[in-house]
Image (cartoon, rainbow, N blue to C red; front, side, top):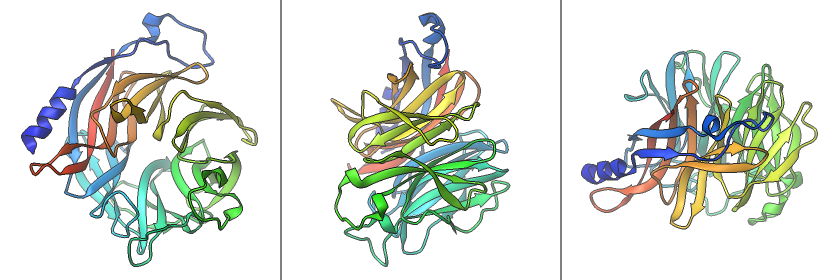
Length: 360
């Protein structure tokens, strides 16, 4: 397994070059030479695999240490009460130690995301109600957000229920100077309609003063609500990348008080979207459906709604959910999960991966 895994990773090492103009949509056009540096994807490595299904990553830097989180489950991708959230920490992003692992009784935990807010590091997770066994059907109206938090990154709270999130599938947090935000998708008027009618799923931007008690600030998708990554700009305006089921994703924009939203379609589907600022560039990560299968990709956003793919990470099958930490304007760290490798018996594994990014 090791020889096969290392060979696959080495084959994927390389330099990915973006030749498309990129930059802030509010800035004047610059030359292609200024806007199109080479991106090196280096030191691709498997960060974690323990035999379980390991997925849905996020990364952050807190008090001079790196933190990596993901969901781990012996029973696989779907909804199981045996799932848990794992948190690893490192000083160099090479050697990692487990610092926290938690679950919620009778609930599936998944999609953990970090938020540093008011001096604390929060890990947010959405939870499906399971009961005592893995459910064959599940109800979004029974969904509930939880968190674990720490003041120092070493001592963590027990899983804490998030007030105001019942019936909401919470996803990716962001913050302004004094507010925290979550995407919370829910059924319209908490409908009791069963099945997979995505037209009745709306997305709310939830707001909190303390990271623990939440209320609805506004609706930004009235139908086909899904995973959404918010980015709060220095002027308080919000830029967001919103998945819309298996259809093309959207770019969403709003300014305080966030009552009105402007939405524009992108040219592709994005599964598990990530949005981050890297210098004066906007980087988008997620799963893209290609002719060769689903791949975790990195894109740069230019203009109003143009994505330029700059890197395709080693990935296939069940994959995506990138985490990103900008170290400076040229260097960054990236995490994702994927099922592109097999063990020595030929069984597909789902593991956590890291790579170093460098702009030239």
